[in-house]
Image (cartoon, rainbow, N blue to C red):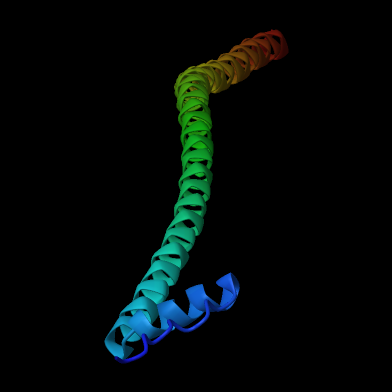
Length: 145
């Protein structure tokens, strides 16, 4: 009879699990495992970058929002200033019109006074000439007598 073949002695447990795993791994499985690890790393890196981009985008949106609020505030200030300037300009135009009408009235008064003065001077001269003529007539009458 043949002697029974004794099974090989069991290998230490740490090496035997690795050895069994290595025996069951074929090159396509190793490639698949490496591809899986690479894909997980890529996915993790993409998530990290997306998170960074999302944070940067949120920061920029916040900055743009603050800039928009500042721009609206400046626009409101400009509108208020424009209203004030328009109001002041309206008042200045009214004062200008009033000043122009006063100037015209003063010019008219001056013209009238100048005319009256000329007329007064002429009346004075006429009166003096009349008085002189009368004195000459009196003197001539007195001289004839």
